Length: 135
Image (tube, rainbow, N blue to C red; front, top):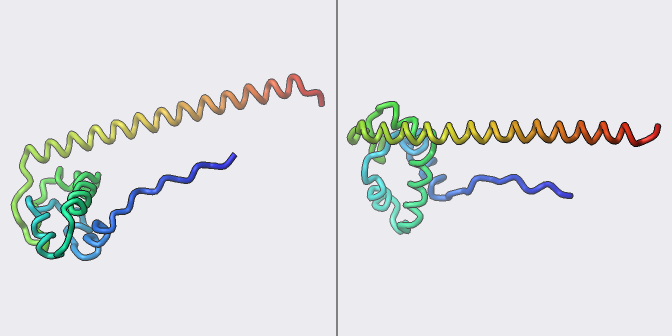
């Protein structure tokens, strides 16, 4: 039986380009509201769907949400301050982070329990094998 291939995160070529070209993306700084418009101006020919997908992945990342919670100012595409993160936005980011961390902890706990059960099954199988297999 072969092992399933490890899942690799989906790559977003536009997001990779943004990380290379714009420090505000690479450093996961809070972005100015409407920064997608500046992206379309700066990089002509971008499809709205590509921009939406890249922004969705970036702004939904744990690192970006942590930056929102830290009460940092927002930045435009050139790294200049461009507004603030509101208390409501901070609260939403903190709530999302708490939920994400809780799910991750629950998932780790379930995995550990499954590993423990598997170890117990293997021990019982070994005991049965030792009991019924003559030496």
